[in-house]
Length: 86
Length: 453
Image 1: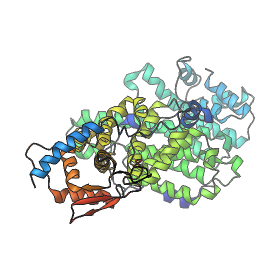
Image 2: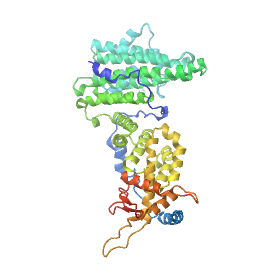
Image 3: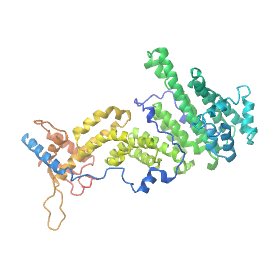
Image 4: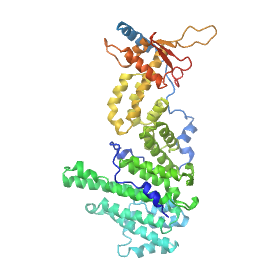
């Protein structure tokens, strides 16, 4: 029943040398889940959708107004130095 | 918690793979600390075959074909031996040995594989493969640790670099070869899909991924992916598999692409893993994000939200300083944060993509110049348009701000132009440099794509 061809394909070979030196800590291995399967509502996606917090993953705001004035001032000061040196 | 024989009986009676696999789980749970001992002391090595025949079949009334029944007895014999070795850790620790546990467990695994390949074990029992394969890895790692601690005692660490390190993972490599046969056993099953061991394919693949990562042979994972790809037409759709199999599989496939610097593809798999991951599997979610965050930075030039990182203190510590600098366009701070965390980034193999964050920091710095430039005189009845012709000198001043340039130091204009053209080339900024006027002319429709201006 076993297929000899795919055995050779997937068999690890002795000549394979370590390619990437750093080894992850044992601690960093993906853990076995305590249950085999779970319903959609218990997935990260399902839970986030239920809470209406679907888009909280990535930063979207630029806070452009918060620091703009400060930066303008700094920029003007440095601009003087740039112009003085050229 | 029921006894090992009760699990076997119930599993067979109701046809439940997980219940049957519970019989082959070599741990004594807190609520039944004597479970393994009770199993070991029910017999002795001379009476074992007949005792097993009695306890597995005659006493339980489970009727299987003669071949199948014999196969289970062949599996439970080395299993009994392995359990005996495990029990020793409790009863005679000085004689206990993980190497012996591993050897007996390997025999159990081989018998189980033979049960499927030649003795007609039914496909619904395939969760037994998951459990037995999982513990084969566990015991191999414990055996390797035991061997290397004995070696370092014997050799006084003198050969740490040559003799010992070569055999550091000998048992894990042995285990991996056995699990590889499990992989073939699942993938090559030609039975119709309802009765196929193919349902075990992702779980056994995951065991191999974990081993290859541990053995620093990530490249071998690609052989598995090729083999899976070649059989993809015969495999059920991914979402038909249990989510624990798929999430783990997607995580590893994502990391494999990540290490090849295929960030877009990596992100696709990691996002899938993230979305389907169990919401309370914190550790696994953290691992997914550790790669997904750098991916996302490279592919979309966006940072993780504060809220996202705040749920994962270790990631917060890892990424927050860098993210703050990228967001603020603080080039000096970015370089310092990269240096401080370099070791950790290298260890987690995320240094390279994070380094690309410097371009994003620079983009954000130059974007601030654009914002600070305000608006041109609005034309009659037209909405105001931002000033799009900006002297190169202003960007030079920004570079001075961003790099915390010292009083009296000079910023090289050619270098600033080089930074500008680099961003334009990479599509992070739209416009051109007019050298004769020392001006940057930015696009009126989206000078900094994807950033709202």
